[in-house]
Length: 465
Image (cartoon, rainbow, N blue to C red; front, side, top):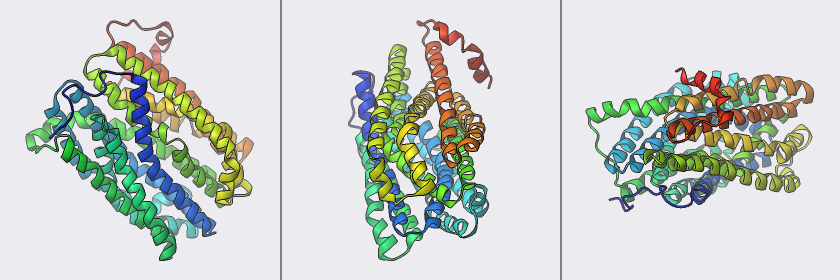
């Protein structure tokens, strides 16, 4: 049975503190998983085979694509459960959690099957060829069937965060990270399975995360309901009204990353290996920013459900402030540690150039990515998920492709990452203008500010859906 008070957790108290606690605890869980991916790359680099590191880079682009479905379903479940809790309706929150889990598992299994049956073509599409292509396909053939288990963990974690249980959501991913960390050296080195060992360890970790996310819901937050056909029919529209645009929103990121990977492939496997190292380092360094979207969503959702519009706006602005503080601290640390990090991976040449570029000016650009995360969470929880879709697709198409082409022509492999970062700056600012506009329109007591009226054409464009 539930052990929480009747009043939802985020309707009172200091908002910045809520955001910091939710983000930091959630990020610890995320970073436990990302850190294991990071260690995977260290182990694989120690094998001294560039094609293995490159294969992980190509596989990562596909895995990012598959995880997008789970992230979209988690966003929908978290938003609906948070709103119901904010309105004081715990029975509805339990039912929405159950139907979202069921729909997510069913559609996630179908999605994974489609991806698995087309792996060779997808890996070729991101630029892999020869032995590297075969290694990436073999790795993915093992990991992709576990996508429904990962989805179970993602949606379960979102439900826990909607209840304010950031620590329990964190522990689920920490447990998965521990499982992966223990199995990695055993399977990669002990059994000599190299990339296959890393894949099997990842599958075991996903099983652990799924189980550890669901058990606290069953034990401490009212468990799951027993929906019948009528409940599934009733909840289909509200779940997928949020989930479909959220999935489309999330798909933009791996598609944009796949283009960046293909562009980097033009400069050779050493460049792709360098980018793969950055891809593993990024979530470890900025795990708090990755977690911020899932952390601030329940805060916005509960207060919106309670009708406290001024508190919704303060939560958004505190989220942006929190992003700035975190990015500033992490950028300074990366710059100071760029030498030891480079030595850890034994990088040289273009791989070293790419790594050092990230551990410096490009890390600062993550402020604008964080701004997009906070804005998208706000859109999703205020009932405008297609705004998130528009911003993300714009950022990973118009905000990526032309800039990557332009800057890679000027600076080579490094220009690929520079161009990607420049597009993020532009769309980060756009997302903030749209988010503040949505918040202002939702609050009948607050007139639209002059600078938001200047963005009226943009807002009207996104309203036409």
